Length: 404
Image (cartoon, rainbow, N blue to C red; front, side, top):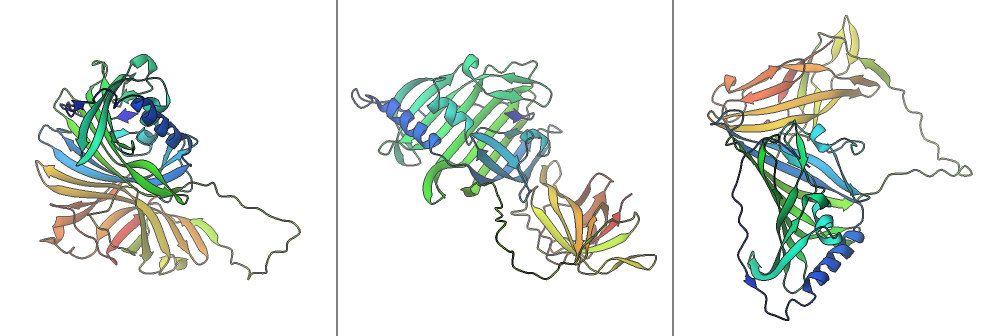
């Protein structure tokens, strides 16, 4: 499933040499049987997915910019599910409803491989002798017609189920899948504004549950429109591990160990109009920061209202980054959007609803204080950088004002 407005590209298959007679006897069935076994034995798992979205021609013809997102992706019972890192559970919503607007795709982990190798949806041509990254490989070309396809393309307003074609490469000796390319066919324009969609998935072995399994290691999604807009998502996967639902078992006959009574926390909502000075507990690194990353800061001083202590100095404030963007043309500037939503102290829990008002000090690398400024509405708080994104150090201070 894909969403976004981008631009047409030219995609050509690697040219290979047809296999000699006898070499290909039963080869395709052996490859498909191997992949079916891989998919059937795959445990439920989750990985961290980091996406860099490069866009050109949007929102202006000269505009070029990129943004970085980070998600948790899981395959549970054969279905892909997504969540922000550190979230309590995976979302039931479509991924396009979770991430900021823009091109996004699913199917890399499960959908495409299942349709091509485990179902009788595709027709094949090959094998062709080929090389991929210096490795001897077999290449097959395939096509899945629209009536057997589960591939849906969206442009934000309209959607269509489409046919697709492409190629896959396997190691010539082990028959292990190395790469899978997918290109949408017959995109109806209108109503769709998307005119080209191409996905390239690279595979590698990853340890999950004590054994090595074949998973996507990286993928690239390229989309286009006839209006000269292009977009490319460069996706990497890391931190893969087996997924297991957490459960707690209680035995009535066992007596729990005694523990000191815990102080009950006061739950409150902070009144509007209070100034809170925060200090970051970890640096914000532009080379790795991504929308979805967790944020943490500490209160620099006590928060009082009419003499009453509402939150003590050192109370923890948590949230996450909502956007990390670097605009390259027609003017270079960066933007980091951030949100804090929870304040917690030794005996306090509070909803944190506030907007960013001021930044403290000059950021290293800025020529003047106005090169890094706060800009906020009641809906969004952001830091703008005049030029490239700069590192915000540990201890960086910000002044926030609570909202009604």
